[in-house]
Length: 161
Image (cartoon, rainbow, N blue to C red; front, side, top):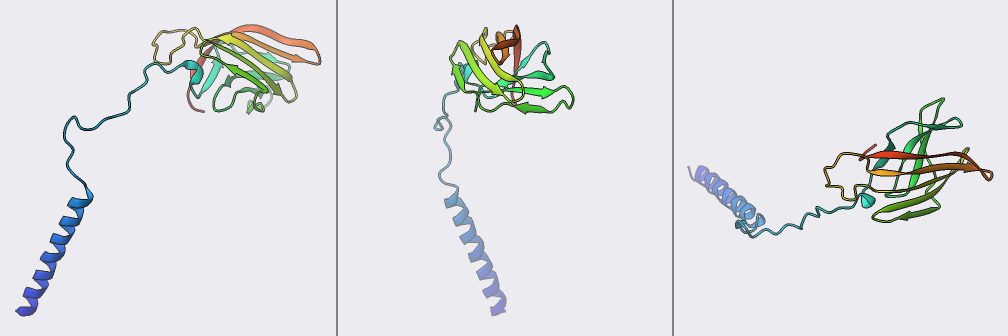
């Protein structure tokens, strides 16, 4: 009987210790209105977003199809070979001037030449629900001092792969 009481006493003591340890680890209760969150920036600029600008109209230069470009984390253009459709990003652009309203990229693309993207963000803020392209500009591809392609294009924007 004494042994049973001892086991019950140890079990109660262990439960009490566990309860106290959990209540102290949880910290003080949260009082409504006491939690401060970082303000949400509803004025994020399109020029600062990580993602991809995709042409609204497909086009090819030589045996390469232009798939779009990215500004962040590194500025680069993306093509795929017409024969395999595998997307191949360029090396990071040699010159990348990214402003809240304009973009100027100069990017080398192996096997094709130099790709230049010059344009504007008609919709500057990412939270703007307006429909329409997120970037409009000229895409120029040149090699050996001659222009292989130059045309104005509109681009949509997407996040992810």
